[in-house]
Length: 345
Ligand code: SAM
Ligand code: DTB
Ligand code: SF4
Image (cartoon, rainbow, N blue to C red; front, side):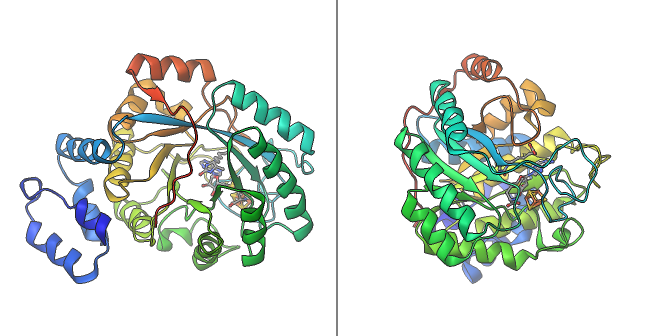
């Protein structure tokens, strides 16, 4: 695979280069061992490699701003252990009905006025019903008419539903693998890993760009983080957009007391995502409030080039927009000026 080859680790950086080369030649895909070898590099070498990759594919070093809106909050029948919107957990989230079109468009206008590139509509559904799709289609058309890039995350999709969203003008569909296949079983029981892969296939087949990533800091091992990134990087093609969320532990969920991941391990995860998916937008997603400015700065150095922008994620907080603009300005980072849908084929 071209990207695995072009992103090959320089011979000077690893001791087991012969093995790595052999693994690539044999399958053309990233192996978990190869990704673990990236994680194990001395920090400076990993960062250098990530920066070289980033500069090759994103010469301007711009940062994309994506704003989230929860169009249908709470009451979800799924059991995702991290999620405050699962009906079965006793959290502060109150279930609400699907938001009206006007309210969505007001939020999109505000996002555009604040400088956002992308507007992502999220719904706490296991899967949308066809009548839900009709309502979301109207939202997509309205948001697109404002000149924003559109994204939606509505749960599992059937092929015909993906087609309807694409015809409405949806640029991206977000559906995460969330973690490695083996760790997944200890986080979610109400839908399988293959269900997620099937939805991603439907999105691809309909001709939309894929936004797919996951959550780190849920108690997974480094090997499991590597296996998760390998699954993403080996999707053919890999996702155009890769949200890397740091778990936001929410009271009432099974992961409420999970200890945070070592911040440098989070930075390493971003760097490895950049190296293995060189043309993707790697997005610093949930958990930025807990990361702080210095760790975020390291993440940008490691190749992150997108953030969720605006004081609210879906149900949890995010840094104030003004704070983010100040951070980007202080780091001398530019924001992406216009939107262009990137499709990796
Ligand atoms: N219900 C749809 C689904 O699960 O695909 C869409 C919305 S769901 C909230 C989107 C993603 O948000 C999840 O796949 C997960 O990666 C992320 N997420 C949810 N709760 C989170 C938390 N507490 N911390 C970090 N990420 C979280
Ligand atoms: C993604 O990977 N992260 C976003 C978006 N896709 C939809 C959601 C983060 C949610 C964090 C918890 C909350 O605010 O409810
Ligand atoms: Fe439902 Fe999505 Fe939350 Fe899982 S992550 S409980 S599917 S809203």
